Image (cartoon, rainbow, N blue to C red; front, top):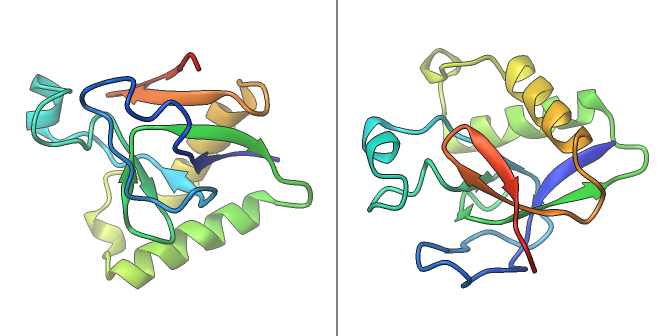
Length: 129
């Protein structure tokens, strides 16, 4: 299965880049806040970043990776464990864990393994090396 993982590849090509994740950790996308929706390159990075499932850090770049043997159930388990570790209440999320995982699977499936991507609110775009 293809997944999105944190990477530092192409970091620094944009002034608004940052990376506080562990390279290779699974990432997901938090919904952008109102400030980030108005100013995607502004002080809040939630609309341009991916959130690390292990480190609780954020990064503006991710890479598509094929992980043999990794399943949808594994993805869900990893995301739930991340939320549990952070103390997030399921009712505080705007989408369910299964819905988030479905979106991540669909998104990663549309890219070639090794593609570095960045985020702009609800859009994920390939980044040039």
